[in-house]
Length: 565
Image 1 (cartoon, helix red, strand yellow):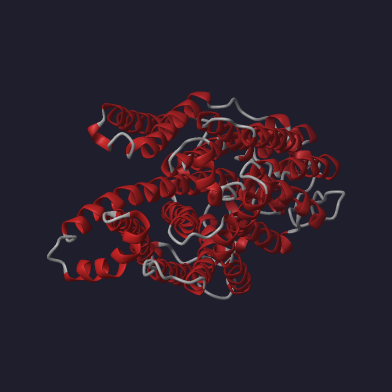
Image 2 (image 1 turned 180 degrees about the horizontal axis):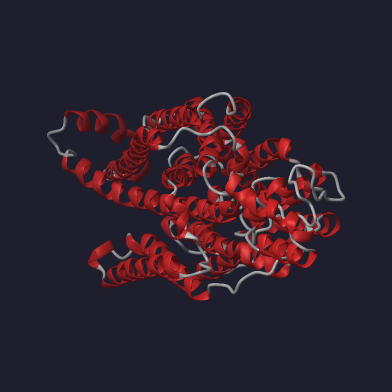
């Protein structure tokens, strides 16, 4: 806190009790999310010094509280990727293509992101404990309904409902952890939180693959029922709202701003999901969605800048560190969820791996992420965080470059090592980038910044998945046409392949059987090349982000890892 922030608190010592109480309440309302940059930021009554003011402490041990809130949050984040390995099974069960099956992933991410800006207002109006319990109940019920869906449209609808229930869990958990731990232990608490947020999407394919292979893809949703019941019990028993949150009076919600936000975000995501199917801008439907996106985005920005109590305080983007960090975390979200979608699809569709083996092959990301996050958490106070972020982007670029060299003879070891590198890169980027984003923001805006940061990461994830599947589909068509051009009777390679394959095919399916095998081989190779293109593009995106890191101001070193999202 600066001296300017502390001066109103000091001035209270010369005022009477009624004025002190009134002033304390007004200071409390500056923190609608119920937490701030430290104990000294909380309003106190009758204390001339912030140094000796009593600090609220929860009844339960902070680490027990951390386990309670993270049980729900981990479940929610796990669901962003647990069904990725089941996409081929879901498509087959619900008569949908692979591209259509990914809509249930992106719809979850977008609805998850949309609810984030309302988190602070709802928490301060109805209480954070009550809000979290309702979110867990909605999420758990929607999970059961998703598992029971009998059509793709039903599944997408229930996933949207699931995302609405789960979207507020992350910032709510972060706020609770920030309040429950003393200032000197908040770094440890946020590192615990950060590992859960990063590792959960990586463990998702393992759990989802095992459930899909041994039971059904529906169990990737049903598994949330016992976890949701346990999380509800823990939150109900252990959690309590701090006094200043119960006493705060929240302003009216900016419902018009929320409406504008929903329209432009939904338009963008539907455009990305349906673009390939509708042949992009050759379709009047896609053109209309693009127009809605642009118009309502502009209206949203203008509206939010002119409101006294906006649903999204866009003034946080005036801070250069936050603006650039948010751009970078959007890119990271796209790469993270894009690769988590591509990896299992490649292993199942082209290499014939079972769902569990496909999930297991990408699991080493978790080990890499945990190791790098523990390391960077210990070193961040001593070294410039921008260096870690830059190295992290370079490692991510190398990882995707190696994945871009995969072929039809790739073994498990050639998949595991790039995934370990990807985990290390993610860990090096996430913690310091989130810390730098909040480094120069006033404590009263950390809540808003947290919501926006999570919003853009999830939107980046939705865009990354949609663009990855589009690249696969378009790339397969492009490479198939190019390969067909070179598949002629004058090709020496084709003659050698025919001499090897035709005798076996002739005895099995007749004289023309080798032609069917040729068509299948061409399609398979075209699909392989489209994966190579997608990974190569993400490699260049990560490499392009590395120099942008040094547009950030050097961190002050005061924030610590408390801004992890």
